[in-house]
Length: 195
Image (cartoon, rainbow, N blue to C red; front, side, top):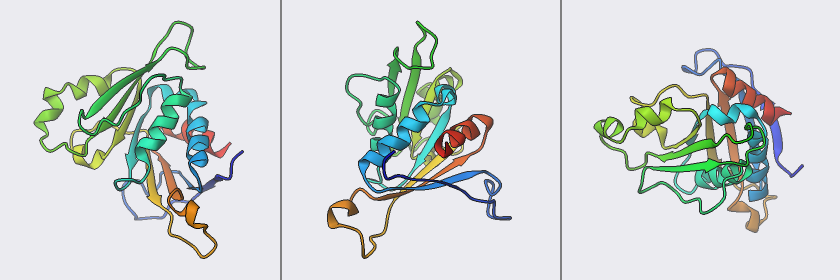
């Protein structure tokens, strides 16, 4: 296993919001290899096939990098580009280990950074995409908060503050990560991270 610091299950804090009782995993990615290891763990859990995950973090936090590693781990080949301008990029995998032979894993990667009008939701057919089987990965979900259907888990990624023992070449890659599970599928994915 890489240097990824594995999950700490944190007890809920009463009165801290709607997700206060949701189980969480807190971790640290020292390098991009840790991002890859995190993605591999999630990709090995069959619950990922029909999950909706929201990705939170500032520009440059590593959301799209994580998505690329996850999609590669799920067997997606070809170019994986950010959906910043297109809002959604569809992907598929015919080589996902846990899918039955001949079944395709459908994946939609959304980026709502430029999403500004709720009418776009209906016009673009997002309701149908979210209702269909497959994995949905959503960057900048707060921009579509009123229209987004239920979410299985949140992933928060933020740069790790430099400590005195941090090497300068590691500082750009270091991240703090929090995974919060809201549904049974989310809890299965959380268990995969804690395994």
